[in-house]
Image 1 (cartoon, rainbow, N blue to C red):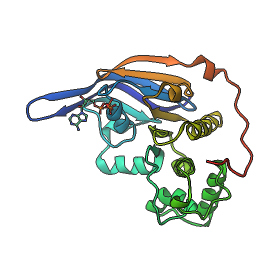
Image 2: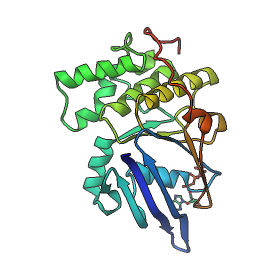
Image 3: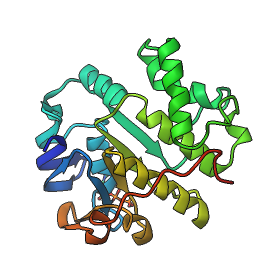
Amino acid sequence: MSVAAQMVDIKKEYVLKSETVRALRGVSFTVPEGDYVAIMGPSGSGKSTLLNLLGCLDRPTFGSFYLGTDDVSKMNDDQLSHIRASRIGFVFQSYNLIQQLTVVENIEVPLYYQGRVNAASRKRCRELAQLVGLGQRLDHRPTQLSGGQQQRVAIARSLVNDPYFILADEATGNLDSVTTEEILALFERLNDEGRTIIMVTHEDEVAAHAKRVIRLRDGLLQSDIQNETRIHAKPKPRPPEPEMAH
Ligand SMILES: Nc1ncnc2c1ncn2[C@@H]1O[C@H](COP(=O)(O)OP(=O)(O)OP(=O)(O)O)[C@@H](O)[C@H]1O
């Protein structure tokens, strides 16, 4: 089985004037391609620190982090920024869309930064909009969309580079419960179709949709448990277009 991400004895220390904070104290886990992992833990347990490492926004103090077969912990800033832009699909709580751009243009943004926009990429972005149920909204701007629809745009954008994994940070944190369920159903479908997802959440109901739950405590991995109900669930059929109300 191919590996999307592997952390080996990862330690992260923040050196302050008066003390050194040991935010991660030796964390190891492997995310195979096609996995769907929820990362949980109390405040201060190291979730954001781990998310920053997974997203190549920071380097560990000690340990190795493999994306595919590349050891990211040995890369310089330019290499990290390249891999971040080209191989990781970020989905944030606040969507982070560009208000002046349409749905398709927002999906295209990661390609734009790499100078890879052309007719074929535009076609692919339209297909991604369709994939997330926004085929009828290609020319809408973010202000013309509901929160759930905006998050769908962000999810489509996260897929445009064919990333190692989608890295979702409290992706449903701004959404009501019905829309949260819709977005989680979309993640589940994308995962059923083979995409790897790593999400940070503090909500048990959200984590219940993942195949696996990793819990951090005081910078250590407290537990790493497979969700048997999800693993053996039958894939859900893709909902028909046009999109749902949210
Ligand atoms: N840039 C930093 N400089 C110094 N200490 C930091 C820094 N970032 C995080 N920490 C410390 O590292 C530890 C882990 O923090 P982290 O933000 O990773 O936890 P968390 O689980 O994401 O918390 P929360 O759920 O509250 O966001 C905490 O003690 C925090 O104060």
